[in-house]
Image (cartoon, rainbow, N blue to C red; front, side, top):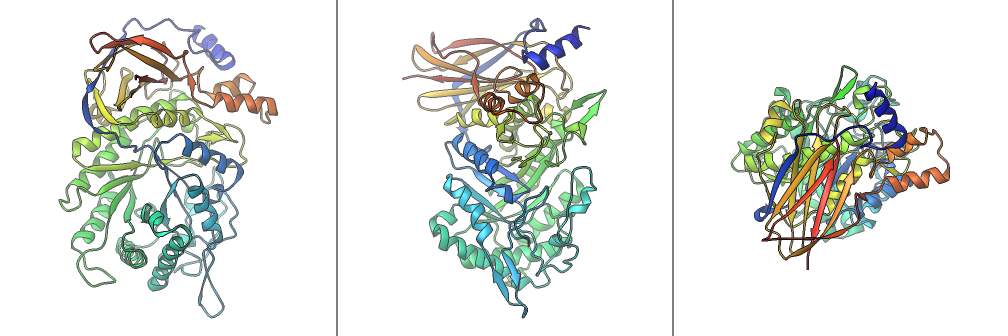
Length: 562
């Protein structure tokens, strides 16, 4: 009875501490600001999505503005379907630009209008494209029909793989298209700007996104890389964006591609090898419903990441190349809604935000352990225009209202400088989560960084099981603090703070919120302070911070000094 009453309170009052006593076993975390672990790379500042035409729509522009503003560094954006034929109508799992068609005589017709709309939206906000070269224009497809699909959640996922997924009937024409696109980009944005982008070929070619063979993908890569470099020798080109490297089918494709890069005969030049400036692959988790609750599987995602790093590290000449995890998420289908896929019920609330905090910290650990060069990890989540409120897509905002997960990225945006030591004497480290996921004790841990005049410590209370349980008492001992007094700002994401979803439920889950309700939801979607900023004393370079942290909650402790 107590549990059901508590759930009612949580739903309607949005109070996370009203129901449960504190855990009798407090967790102590030690952070040493004096022990640097090298520069903190903003691997989180990468986002992507399937539907490129949402980019310049009302809520798409609003969300991109917010993403750009939360980051001190330029955010990179990756979108599918930038070369797909069509009128630009937006739809789930679909997008088009009509960049390439042919006239009655079979001569190319280039129209960059929609592509420019998309990239202009990024550039205007100080963002940069991770420019995905794909998919196949209808006039170039070796099997063009059927071409336009009309997939909806609940349909067979394989219905999306139509004529755009096939190899070209003319590789030279495809290469000319790529050459013209890069040249057009230089003319529009300038050589220096385009040099700062990343260009890549296709998406997940080891599954049905690519209806050709492995060798045909390799051939297309050679033609594409040659075209990019002819247009701009200093441009950066990479691939192959395989998904699930821990799967033997994926590993076989990945290694075949990398073998060709190192030792293969180039399809265009006839020489050995092909240009590769960065390496990409995808890694996903695997949630499911167990005994009526959502159970995540972070271990599955970390094993994919670790295997991808292991594969790259096995090539001595490639090991130091930058790696971009082109999609790095709790599961695979952003457009598969919660109403039809109950395992995706984690997406609206704080489980998504706590998973994100805990998993991103471990990506750094995995890269360090394998000695590879992790540049970015793309969160494949954006927004779905004009959908029901909180329908449960994997998105960062719903109808222009930010969801809790976006506030984790706001927290990351306040972290800079060098990563510093967090003592690894807690219930989990990256190895244990990789092997077991988080099925026993909760993962209560931290990720910390220090700059010249500030430090930021992210603390989370994560568990794979989305259950309401008692909050935990957490003590963070911070060593190596300069000065005798520091300003503490404590930001929080939980049931009560920085959580538009709980506010929406407390309103009665309105299908058509009023203007007043929308304003309240927008406010609730922003990152909020748990308490007022306060000055705290430091003795012998050490200060201790104690607080209660609810399950699936995330805190950011920001310390600043003169």
